[in-house]
Image 1 (tube, rainbow, N blue to C red):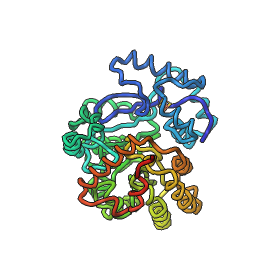
Image 2 (cartoon, helix red, strand yellow; image 1 turned 45 degrees about the vertical axis):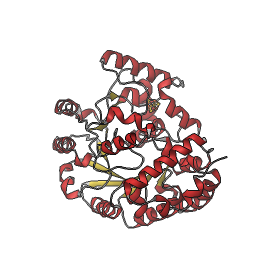
Image 3 (cartoon, protein in one colour; image 1 turned 180 degrees about the vertical axis):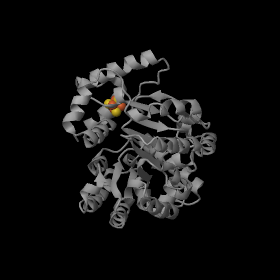
Image 4 (cartoon, rainbow, N blue to C red; image 1 turned 90 degrees about the horizontal axis):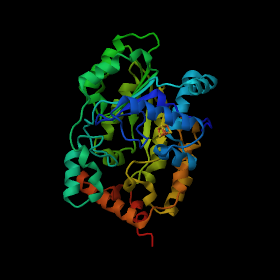
Length: 392
Ligand code: SF4
């Protein structure tokens, strides 16, 4: 991790949330601001504080992660800028900037999604709406936070048109979901961006769950510098359980996308959770084998944190996690360059266990997901049973 002060997001980024909020950073806790003067005032203030080495209260997530020695969105963005502009130019660019100039677009066209990952919710997947209502009806009040999101929310055509008028200013467009490959407005955006044939065209990164047949969406990306990130968190049946879809089909689609001429690089994004902790060595061994047969496979980004605390691996006993740490370290050692931020995952394996109230919530949630899937994660990973036992 680099030690540079400041953050590119406040003045360089625009992040559009699936529910239409506009922020400069989806990690920041600053509420979205409707008035553009206020928005700019806040951006500039936060930019200056970060540049002076101070932590604004809205940046507590990055502060916490960096305090633990873990990659944050801020440090990850620094890495991307350095790889595009070089270190000296990136430092100068950020220090000189006084006014907002959007180079970096992180965009979510809707929360339309066709699957129900165990660590997701209605906020990012419309398929979760029915299930979230069922969870609340069965007394799982910790899903209360999903109530405001229990609708399908899509970006307006007008907003998409406005964004396209700034296309020549972008160096990076990150598209997330929902599931972007099933969202018609996203596919129209990609087609029109490609047809602009910009001289300095941005890198377009699409994060997908990999379920849609590539022949139905890849033709829309012609003319783009394209990177595709597949979200994979479990191999085989564990993958089926975590994502509630067919892992075998996703793997087949991964290989098709990797062989497509318009795709420059393909990556895997892995989210560490309670449900794949004991599966880590097997999963990453398979990733190594996949890399060997896929020349465009650049990296496997290891996300060490899940949004919902009750899907966190920190519900598991520290002793059981330390055993996993030993085993998975041996796998990472085989090709450390492939695994982006794997050190963070190793650190999480060493962190103290959550309090008993949180662990009880994790047990309830796992039970609810087992019922929803129609098969049990405990059968796939019997170690989970004892590792989720009471801490007292
Ligand atoms: S420091 Fe973190 S939370 Fe704050 S703006 Fe940058 S990336 Fe967002």
